[in-house]
Every structure is written in C-alpha cells, then in structure tokens.
Amino acid sequence: MACTAAKCPGTAHGLRKAGATRAAENGATEKQLMALFGWTSGRMATHYTKKASQKRLAKEAAHLLLDAQTQNKKPAPPKGGAGEIAKIL
Image (cartoon, rainbow, N blue to C red):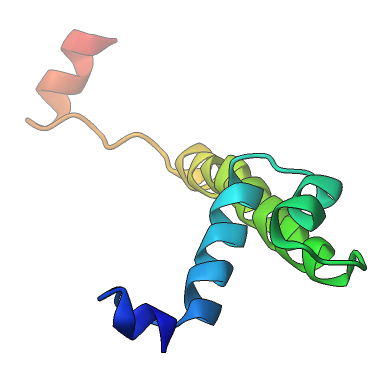
C-alpha cells in the first residue's frame, strides 16, 4: 500500500529485493547488508552475497568458453587453390 500511495511501481518487498541485489553486486558485505536492511541474522545477507558472487564469477569465466572454442578451430585454408598456397609457402 505504501508503494501505491507513493506512486512507486512494484511492492515494498520488490524494492527491498532490488536494493539488496544492487548493494551485493556492488560489493556490500553480509554485515553491511544486515545493517542496511535491518536483518538480525545473516541468512538473507548470505543469500544475496552468494548470488552476487556467483554472477560475478560466471561473468569473469565466460571468456573461458570462447577461448576454448577458438583454440580448437583450425585456420581456414587460403582461397585460390594450389597456386595461392604455393605463394604463401
């Protein structure tokens, strides 16, 4: 109801979730999340920091998939037939 009164889209829960996600993805620690959102246990803070860490690690590792693909590819032979190959060699 407070979100509707403030003409804010979504719900209070959605806004808290978005805030916690953003803070964790920007490097907030579990203790910082607990302080920001008033959580008395680390359960929710751990949830958000683990998700943020997994997202960061996946982003950092994504290039490994591409590198593996390009390392397995052989260069295409030059166009133009045997005469062009002889010029290269």
